[in-house]
Length: 301
Image (cartoon, rainbow, N blue to C red; front, side, top):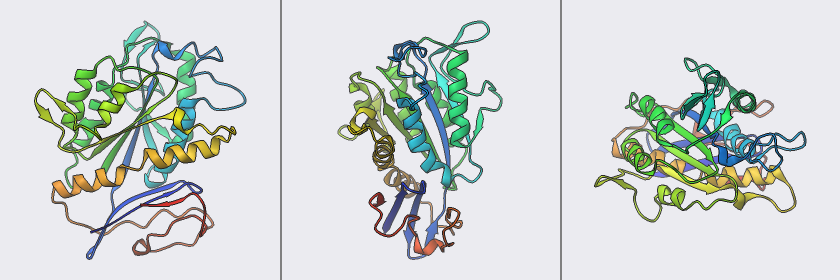
């Protein structure tokens, strides 16, 4: 079985496909964002805050969101993304929530494209009060509920969690991940700020398979990266974001394929690949990279 995963940083497209002698499996990616609004991020009005909205450059949360989201959105047909927050007090009564809609609409938390998610994130910073603790399990369970309803390989769910600190509900988070490991779902965790991320590394499960109450995760579904490792010393944020996106998405193809294999899902015809404006339409069989030949950011795994 050949595997092809293409990350095209110039035209921001992601393709996770399974190639077999019989055809190509096309799978719709459903992308959800969850952002840490705990008080440890600092007062958003202060330049020292990880949530500070500078008029001159994006903060680490915005850069991580844009780097990953702009790639994934080109593989999502409707480009409508649920955007959640956790660890904040909400207006008007100050209720603490670990699963709130960034757009303020719990019945419809979808935002139009990554630009819509960014706008909802900025608006949330103006309306909620950063608080705590740092609980991951509610947002993981939120996505898992939707993933549990899809069993035919037609959809795959990716949850991006951006956070600054130590997890407060480690036991519950482990249980949520173990439960989700049998679902068509992957979790990306991007750590921002100077904190130690030992717990995140444990959740990543690359060295030791994560377990909860004697049950081991069926497969590895978590990828963790610390944002600070990708900050370009020359101040080139575009390059930082490209490097981050490449490594953040590196494990998704194998995680997707492992789900397909364990469920015995056979290939089906793929939809036409996304083609950016101005580029020739290509057939799915050719798996074209939508970057100019020899582009330095062209990545194929």
